[in-house]
Image 1 (cartoon, rainbow, N blue to C red):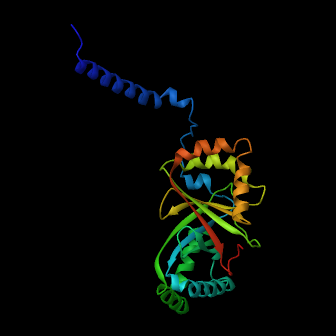
Image 2: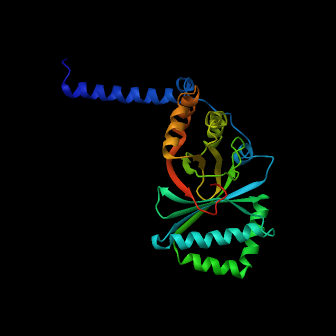
Length: 271
């Protein structure tokens, strides 16, 4: 019996579906294992596996979107408060760096704080600040200058440099990666090897992952002399054997990513 065009189309479509099911099944089985790096299942939180054991530092990052006409006054007010907190030994916190975003969200201030002593230090600091009438007055004045604000609590990766004060002038890039849930350990495994490719020019400042706020978020902080220096440094990484492998295996872990180029404020310890 002659085969009609309708029958041929049906068989072709059926074959396509069968092939797709086989491919998907294979992709989840032995075929995929030939190409994908697997990470052994762990029986501990990734925060315990990836953070530094020798310190109990907790970090807070703040993103403040400032009214454009208020940015200069905001920077002056924030610098004065940071100075007072640094001078007062009763507050177990210190500002690591403060910046204004140059490329990225405009009229934005970014602050990175360190709490030496972890969550107890954070709790102690917040309690003392809430009892400090001068600080509460600062917050009321600052609120008049803001459009919006958000923050995250972070831990630092064990294999990254601890962010320490440095002289300037520098530009800073914060590269923010939103990872797929469940991939933080794999990300850490790859970057523990890859970070050595990015140390020659002293550009690596710090690496952090979120604990409270938006989750499965990674922040890498880099310092460069200029945008041209940034381009040359990043291009040089591709000439090093192994860097391409890190990129190949970490890109599939990312849901979205963002780059901010930031200028340090005059009061920032990172210049």
